[in-house]
Length: 346
Length: 244
Image 1: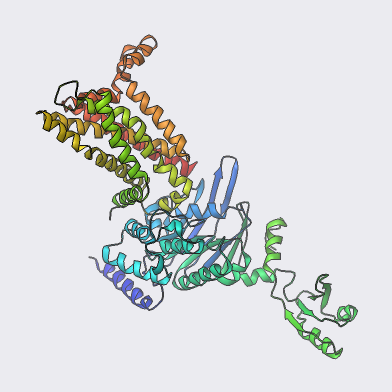
Image 2 (image 1 turned 90 degrees about the vertical axis):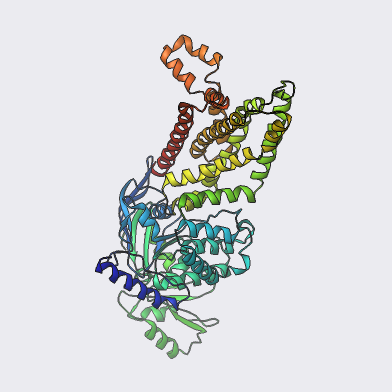
């Protein structure tokens, strides 16, 4: 073995030991640590005359949880299928850990864990049989396979249903089996297609927690059309519609694009807050009153901070305010604006 | 474990945890028995051999093999597991081979379970067991040929019914290819060499040659090559679906 290979080996070992303490450890498998973990380059996919994905270039750096957002039919699933090697790009390419999915599909697939939309699995098999199949397909030897099996089953709390047919499991459990399948070989890169879609709030919470744990030492690409998920999970967001890239930013940056960013809203039940008075503040641009619950939102002029002046004014007037809030910005509004407004970068 | 073996094991496992395996085995064994004794005149022939048994196999396979093969790909495409399978690190050819081998081994198992008829014929007389062995080999090869056709056509569609019907039709044509009626039909329109070619495509002809106890390399090659050709075609179909 050349000296270089020994070095790599020891590095791998160290990484492994470091991560052993964590709930779901990762063994380094990436050959090109300096490269982006997931990268698409002018990725395009056409179905006949329809262009589902149009010259999309996105990248996820190591340790990132990248959210792929878009309305239904935006091309999210198609992008993920191409990265996972299920669909062949019409042009352009994607790289996973530096492996080109078109030129080195098997290598790319080895370092990738993939949860397809709806978490399909062989329903007639038991959880144990299914995971055993995946472990065999992933080429793990008996010892590693057993160790990983135990860890994943423990981490996803599947012990109780190991010998149950997957068909008989609840949706939430089936999703967990899907996640187990995706991480059983300890991939550095995870692609999860709508992992919480169709789950109840408790199950969503569980799955998000799991993703949070997994995100500690992996790069994750996650698609969703749920905006609440973005805050809960992602540290960067890519918004696409009609297969085109419309925005690529952090959640905070997106919120800053919102009309509501920096606005102050409060409820003052039973008191006649004078809108006129608020409007006279030099920092205030406009005021809106919610016709349903009477909540008042005050919008700042660009670059102005208005929480303090508004609070002072309210105190001076001796008005009773039940609760006051500085808005970070509303992602749903930004999302709507970006995906329907026809305006690229707001 | 080799991905081909892993796919084959998973596939076999699925047969036996669902009724597929048991329904197939029971119906195969019952029909094989009935056809041999009633349609094949096993007793009346007064000969200690398994000719009536084997001669019914093409017709038995015509219905039963497509029933096994129809689900190979159509079910995965419909259920979404195809996406899962193809995102695992294996080539399309490995996936195809694994699935095919599982189905072929399963039919081989069904064939082995017909051993009581072999015991019967040995009890009743003294048959040429070499010929019987050749019959079994030929029968298994023919089943493999049908299965490869079915595996390819199952990749074409998401519908198991469509896969079944297509496979039955293609297998039926390949059984009949060597029959005089078919050859007469082509006699007028095609040159003699092509007509001979059509005749050589007949599964029945090659199977009958083997089951008479003549293990000719050409007959064996015919089956091996047909399997390889249909499986390759199936892989191309899958690849086309990935690209198109």
